[in-house]
Amino acid sequence: MFRTRRAAFTLIELLVVMAIISVLMGLLLPAVQKVRESANRTSCQNNLRQLGIALLSFHDAARRLPPGLGATGDTKVVTVSNFKAATNPANQRVRSWMSHILPFVEQQNVYDALALNPADPTNSSSFNITTNDAAGKAIINTYLCPSDPRGATATPLIGGAARTGFTHYAGVGGVDSSWGGRWPASDGLLFWRSRVAMRDVKDGTSNTVMVGERPPSKNLEFGYWHSLDTINWSKGGPDWEFDTVQYMSNSDIAPFGINNGSPCAFPATFGPGRIDNNCDFNHFWSNHPFGSGFVFADGSVRFLMYGNSGVMNALATRNGGETTTNTDF
Image (cartoon, rainbow, N blue to C red; front, side, top):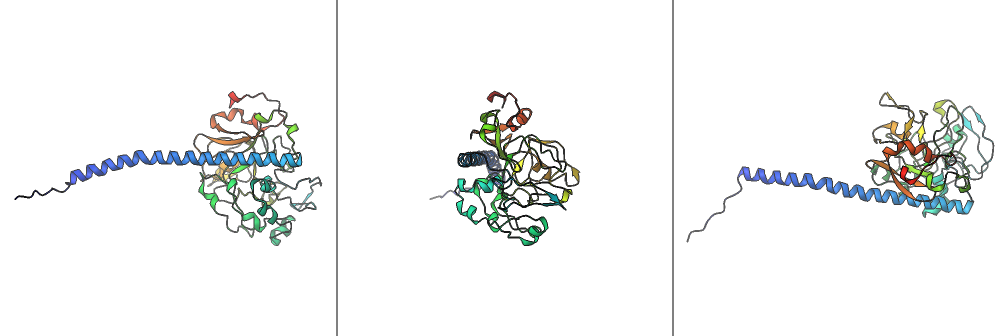
């Protein structure tokens, strides 16, 4: 009885099979990546929604939004001498709006652990302020967008400062930072020593952005949820941190004026960015394609396309008198 032997694959057949598998993988991977990014974007927008709820909850309790940076109830006159900022009795000038809303994002334990006394004596003595304390290194998932994995770890020690957790979101200080060596007088909702109440939002809460996406800097030296200091000594005058506050049309070079030897473009406006470009820390952008998520003063979250850049300045002001409708963005 004869038994037929099955022939093996020829080289040509093997190459054809491999080519078919490669084509299928080429079709499958973009689909998987698209589904993953869709899930990341949904998670990111949910974080923004939680931030909006937390800010409004803080407002319900305090009758105003938290300061973008500084102590709540701070009314002491700020004096600047030899690049040092005066402290207030509570010694909380480095606390950002993200520090203040910790109890409203289920992080009461982190909030309670934020020390009022300096944890970094060297920098505290140099700047005459409270610097990062140990609790500031906490990774707060609500403050991170999963589209950028860099936020999953705390930054190592930089210049003697304590480690700090990152954030992918920044409060909207207004249209421009009004720098030039002055404390900014802002027209948004969250800025240095801000005390904005919803009654002050004359443009309408549904037409005013409160928080937007802005990933940490390329070198990971900026983008902390718990700020390092309230002055920028490298500029030779009074300044404050960009870590948790950004402007819609930023005309200042802080914290970055160059990237890999090339000057940054100013004003820096809402538009696409890259994590390998330090200049992109100077404006709102996201790791999502085509646009970025924002939470409005009414708590709603919307994904705004980069093509809406013309109306963003109007959305950044609380009392600018501009007329905008939902169809504009």
